[in-house]
Length: 78
Image (tube, rainbow, N blue to C red; front, side):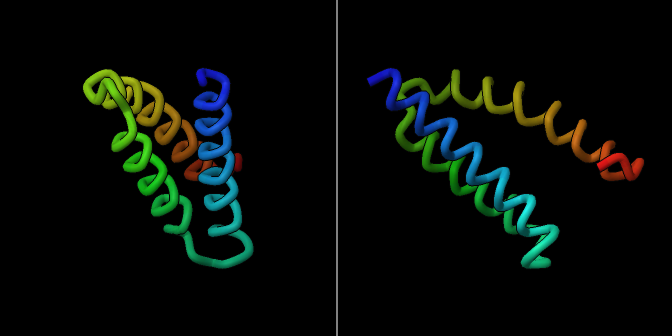
């Protein structure tokens, strides 16, 4: 069961990442990745048993990643 959960988390991450890339380059809809990411997080939150731990983990991982990517785009490194 743990391997399936891990696989689903990685799959959701990859789908969100692809939506971000294709939203910016192919579809020209920059909020596609954000929308897919929010849907993924809401679904994961809904099925999470420890909701408080999920929120803490999501903020600790998402916030630095978002800031790092924003700086990379701002300085035209991306």
